[in-house]
Image 1: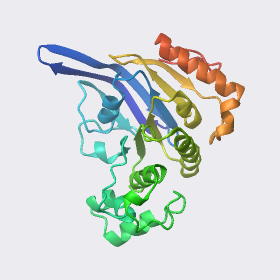
Image 2: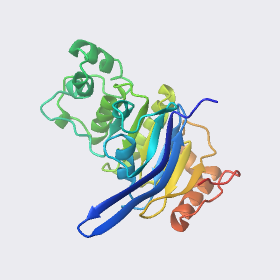
Image 3: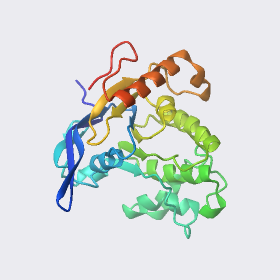
Image 4: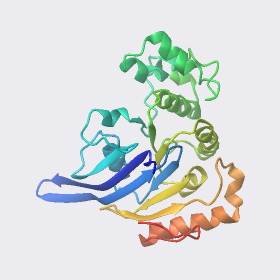
Length: 268
């Protein structure tokens, strides 16, 4: 049996604040198959970004393990190399042109400049950035900046993409446009994606499955399958199955317990 692309098991995390110990994560487990899009959603402050940092190898967990393609990566140099991580802000350097921003990660890894530019340049048209290769970030719209940041992330060709609320700072119309665009390109390229979001509809529009976390200390309240084929256009928002799934996610968020949505039941 082929192991999942990403397998996370038994993640615990505590912080010490003076004489207090704050438990943030409690026995969190999730997985994502190759080419699968999984969203993580939960109350504000429950520890979603902390979980992402642990999965990416940027922060240590108190306990638990992360596997990629069946191999344990926790505590190994290969841990961070398995993930391409896009944070909430685009973090484009204002003094670097758009092309040079998108190749930055490759250059840091030692890829020759010409090869890095060729690899990134091949994606500019599909990312809606053709003609802006030599522009500076201040000339781009918010949506274009986020697409440039995502291009910088995916061009590294890591097995798994971690997206931490990439559209959270955008206006509603731009956010909807980019959600639909990401739905299309993630399916087109077959990316394995783990997304943190506060937006239930964003999670439903993009995901194969949604992992619902409880309030802190976060544990998995439900894993809900989205019973609609991908990619999904905005018209799916009016679909009966979409509305029922949305109701299920909202109920799971409120109750902090598993909720059947697709007929097979939610999982812990």
